[in-house]
Image (cartoon, rainbow, N blue to C red; front, side):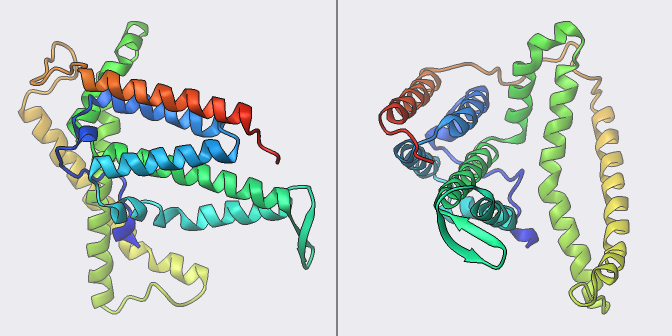
Length: 270
């Protein structure tokens, strides 16, 4: 299960998606998130699915790796699907005990689940194709206008990126601790919920100690390199928008317009 968590992982590559300015990727991701929630009809979602699959193909990130990002949230997606099946009023399809499954509930449940899947895949592509350093620089640049109002843009971007970067490291550390405890006879899979929670203590304690130790080592390393925050700092590689960034923005703008056009012609019936 732990190996299926791909949050924060970066896959180096030379695809067009990798070469885009990280600010472009972050901004376009937010635009696509809004578009996913605004879309309503079946043709519009077919277009979004096609666009997402094409983006994955262009990024050259292995499709199985992208699908693995869905696995940790499978139960949430299924729960969302089932809840909408039985809680939406409409024409009855079947009745299971006290629950009534309606045609509108099935349509709405599939729609909401599809939204979650598209959001997860597109968000995962951002970290798959953008290095932590690029994410830090891009976040700082995007938040820099707010620095005039006292927001520490650089420090905030640094904290967010460090937290994201250490997710794979902590997952790997947790996996090592679990294997070490199992080799000592620990059992994490049997017993009631209270017994399982108690069995997690030998995992959580060394994990927290390791996390604090890593944080202290990181702070010491940053101080040794004379890190004093964002004041007066420069960047080895300055971010610059290029023609491909405007082309990507144009494609997303076209998808945005196409979705609204399809929804106006084929409105949703649910």
